[in-house]
Image (spheres, rainbow, N blue to C red):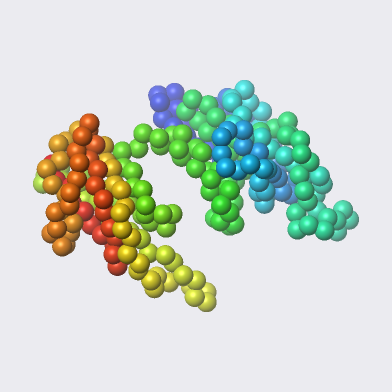
Length: 238
């Protein structure tokens, strides 16, 4: 992995994935606090410290700190009680960081993906997006208007010279102890752009075989799509 980053590869690392000194980060152990608060030091709509439901891993590093960490005033226990569900933050940034950034490495001091899987908190998602936007800023496929539930997948058929783009939109609904897909709303005016050096000849909605207006300029194809009944396929021919 060290060799991978030295040759230009990008890594997003979380919490206990580092157990010794590597990537310019020295691991010192798990903090003793029961919760912690993140304070982003970059431009974001997260204007106040945001609660994470776990303590961070303590590291020391010369990498750029892009989010500081605030500890709670004390751990919430039977012997040291706080009327809030979680003890408020101290208001002071701790000596160990919450988020570090190097040239090819971004390190989250929390088990950030587990945190989001458990809580689904908006601020946790925005916090994770920092790394994705940094390392995936030059991604070839961009889809705007499909919202957070939407999914997009693109594949290339070299033999027949086309890309197949699958767009999905279907909000899951909780029913009892299962999650079901019941409603299939139509989503219109989804803006798709894809960077490719291959001159595009046609964009066709399938299986309807309906040609779609598109623009191909400066190595990028753009068109507007829609999704009905949960899924739509577009064939982009070159």
